[in-house]
Amino acid sequence: MTHPLGTPPSLRRTPLSAEEKVRAEANFASLVAQELAANGRFRVSADTPEMIELFQAVAHRVGEMLQRPVVSYANGRYIVIAFGQEEPPASLAEAPAQRGSDRQASSR
Image (cartoon, rainbow, N blue to C red):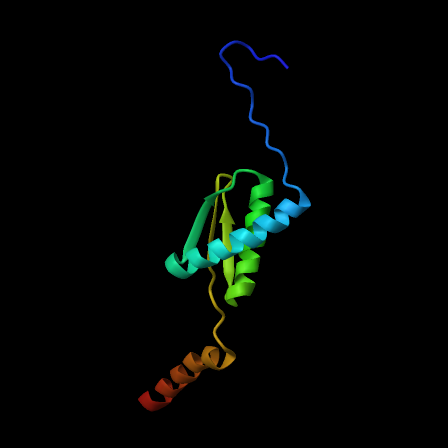
């Protein structure tokens, strides 16, 4: 393929093989888990659907490893992986409503 003078050839990425995807997910998971534990978030360049999919799988694996909710946000250039909101236990979720009714009863 010829290119007009002064224009570089376009970048072509070779898709990852199935084995490479498995290895990348396993290796990135430990790195992302360490970064989340230290800083609470991890940001990496992910500008292709394949890389976004890979890091979403990494986020899922990290959540399972750490037994905490982990979320990922992608914007087409970067993906950010961070801890998600944890659901409060049912007994704690009911406690504020109960306290509110106690306050109303005591103010009467």
